[in-house]
Length: 459
Image (cartoon, rainbow, N blue to C red; front, top):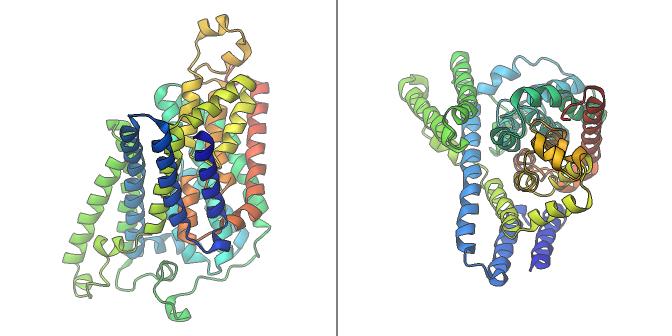
């Protein structure tokens, strides 16, 4: 059963990777893959609790999907009011390489406070206003993915996995920031430097539908600022929208409720505000209903194929987790490797293929937090010492699981979102970006190793 499930999973990923060759939409493949894996598990698993496990996995997946739909709606609502024009008007550089470093830096720091998916959506939408050429936008989007994943790894609220480790006591906020900031910075700086060499020095500005004869696709719609909305209203919607997104991690830390609850509140507030604006502003009230910047209109343009692709991928991974396959992989690492750097490094490579959340959860189950007594009693005190709170293993795991997802475009939520928004080819990312991401990933591990030798972080 296990072998058959893995075979279906690998076959599904190969079809997703070869989407540009087969011409079969990756979302359809992901849905069939998820259904098939769960079917095999149900028929041969002989576990009466499979139905309950399926509902639980669906619930966990839907939490992410609700969050993603809310974030995409808010970002698209900001865009419909021309909010991103406020930022693009401040960017005067026509130098491709300078712009790449600027957007990478913005993404790196923004993703430390916002969710990686949200940050990626915002910055990818922003690049549409600045760059006309599709392949050049792919390079920018790829660097944004790397920067989002790297930025989320050094902040306790920057990623789901860092939040898990922080909430469970494996790491503390101050140590996490001080020990991982430099490695994560290196992990994004090197790929950005290398990717900049692929770009021309000057930018061809994004064209508008009126110039190109476009048909209203999201890329084209994102190229113009609506003339019927003034600069004050644009700034208002940008500030309220960004504030609504920043509210989500604050809501999570204050209430302990899942992030999607905060996103529901934020979307509801933005919805009410947009309705009031459209009702009270004469310039908007007199517009045709199809043009008014309302949430009901924005929702029609949500990228549902991306949502369904995410549903299929997460449910397929959930089946592997429920079947115990991921736990068996962690157990094998524990028996045959039993060293912090190799285990965390392999977890990072695996996170490029499967979701990093179940991988980190499996490691947290396999390697409980150690204390002084367990170090003394351990047969391998050197490795056990790395499992202390704020130990080397936990910092390595945080870094590797977060940054390793950038090695493949499907390895992280940020990558999946960028893939859906810009229709990035899996093969193109593998050929053009994966090696650059791997260089940054390995360099960051090297920085952690040097820090460990010089200042003895994490035991």
